[in-house]
Image 1 (tube, rainbow, N blue to C red):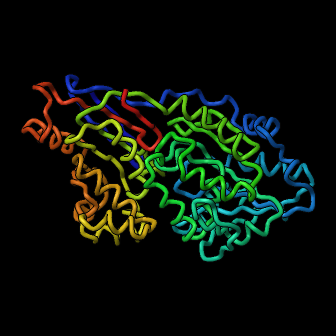
Image 2: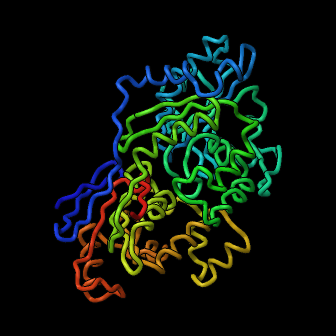
Image 3: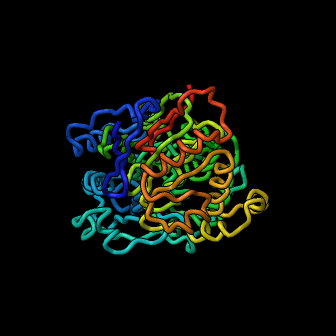
Length: 418
C-alpha cells in the first residue's frame, strides 16, 4: 500500500506490504469551522469564565503574546478580531504590543515576524521578540521554579496569551499559559520547569502533568485571558476558545482529545513524520514525534522518523550534549538539568530499546551522533528495519510477519496501546 507522509513543505511516499500493515494512525478529524473569522469573534463574544472587559479597559497598555515560527498557531488569523475587540473597547493600536514567545529558541528575522502576524498588523502594532536575558523574578513555585518573566510583559497593564492547543510530550498539552512559561521566561526558569519532565506523569495527554501544573501555578496571576485555537492535521481551525486561562484551556483540550487521543495495537515498526513544516523544522522539534511513537513500538523493534530538518539539529546545547559519552548522559542530566541536553538523553534512552532510523536532510555523521541510523529514503529505511527483524533482531514474533504502523502526523497524534 502506498502511503503519503508530510516532509517539510512537501510529501514523500512509502510502500508498505499489505501483509505487514497493522494500520495508519490518523487523527479522528473534526471538520474545519465554516468561517474562521466568525468562529474567532464568537469565541471572544462568548468566553469561558472571564470576559476581555474584565481584564482591561481604555488607558491600559496591553501586550499580546504570540507563538514563534516553530508553532502552527494561526496567529495572523487570531490577531485581527482580537485587536478589533480591543480597539472597540477604547484601546488604540498605540497601546497594544505583540511579543513573540520565542522561549529559548532563536530570534526571528523581520520577515518572519511579518509573516507570523500579516502585513497589516505588522504595520500597525509594535512587534518584538522575547529576550530571555531581560527578565525579572516575580515568584518561586512550590516545585522550586523561579518565575522570571520578560520585563515588558511584567510592565503591561494586561497580558493576553494566544496560541494553539495540541498534545505536548511532557507538558501534556500546549497552549494556555505555556505562552508565558517557557514562552517569555528566562533560561533559568525554563530549565527548572523543564527538569520536571523526568517525572513519570510528565507525558502527552495528561492535563495534570507536573510541568503544566508548575506553569499554571507560576503564571496564572500574570495573564487573565487566553485566545487559543485547536487545529486538525490539515492545519484548519476546528475550534476556538477564549477566556480564563485554565477553564478555557481545558475546554480546548477536550477538542484535542477527540481528534488525537487514539488507541492502537503495538507494532514491530512505526513509521512516523512530525507532520511537515514547522514541526520538522529541525531535529529538536521533530524529536517530539518519537516520544509519541515510542508508546506503540515493541522492544527490539524500530522507529523510522521522516523529518526534513532543514535547520539541522536546531539547538546548540543539544548538539554539545551529543558529544557526551552515552553512559554519562543520564547521570549528567540528573546532576544538572540543561535545556537541550534532555533531547540527547531521551533519544539515547530510546535507541537502547529500539532501532531509530532517520530520513532527513541532516548529514549522516550528525544523524549517527544523534543516535539515529541515517537512510536516504523511507523505502531504504523500511527495508533495513524489516531485514533486521527477519534475521532475528532480538524479537520473538513466533514466526509471524512483522507488524508496521504508520503515523503521518506524529507531532500531533497521541497513540496509546489498547
